[in-house]
Image (cartoon, rainbow, N blue to C red; front, side, top):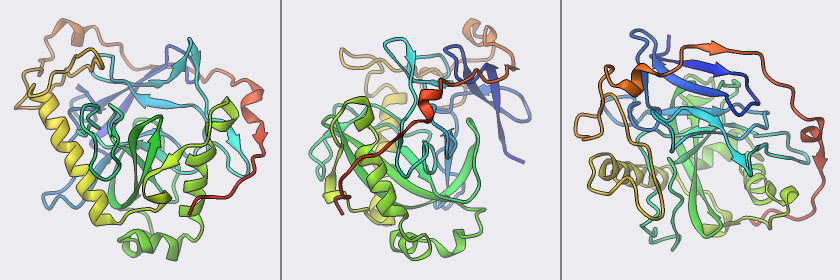
Length: 298
C-alpha cells in the first residue's frame, strides 16, 4: 500500500478540479512539491515520482506552484482548460507524466551545458512502465536518462524513469537499455516533444544535445542539482517571490524551512474535504488527429 493517496475535489476536466495529496494513514494533506521526499530509499538510488498525467490522456495536469500546498490542477490558457493535441500516430501523452518532488529548475540559473535558464518548475518525469497510473499517484522509480527540451528559451529536463515494480525494471538500468528492450520509444519521445505544440500554432520545439538522451549518471546529476536549488528555495536562501516568479512554499514537514506550517493553521483547516465528482465531458475536437510531416532530429 502506498504511503500517499489522492484527495480529489471536483470533476476532472473542470476549472475547479484539484488533486491534493494526503498521508494514507494520518490523512494529513502534504505538498507534492515540498513534503514528499525526493529519495525513496537510504541509498538514494530510488526516487519518488508524483504522477500528474496518466498515459493516453490529454488533459494537461500539473502541480500548482501558486496555490496553498500545491494541489494538482488542470492548466489553463486565457481561462480555458488546456489539453494536449493528438499528433499522429500518438494519442495524448505516451507515458505516465509527472514530476520529482523537492526539485526546482531555478529560473535565475543557466545550466552550463544547455546555456539556458531553468523553467521555474519541479523537474518533469516520464515513466515508461506498462501500467497506466492515476493523477496524484506516488510511484517509486529509478532514473534511466534524460532529454533536455529547450522550451521558449528555457531548459526543460525530461527525466526518463521506470517504476521499480515494473516487470522490465530489473533489465532497465541505463539509457541504452531502453532502446534494447523498448525499441522505438526514445525516437517516439523525441518526436512527441518536438511536434506536440504545432497544432496550437507554435513552432517545433528544440532540444539540447541534438535531441540525444543523456545517460543515467548525467540525469541523476541533473536531478541532484535541482534538488539543491529546491533546498535553497525552501530554506529561504533564495526568495520564494521575485519580479519573475511567485511560488507557494507552505509545507507541513520540511524541518529546515521557515515556511513550515501546522495543521492548526487557518489555511490548512480550510482545505476542502475529499469530494470527487464524475468527469465532465471533453469537447470532441480534442480527439482529432493531426498529421504532421518531418523527421525526428536524432
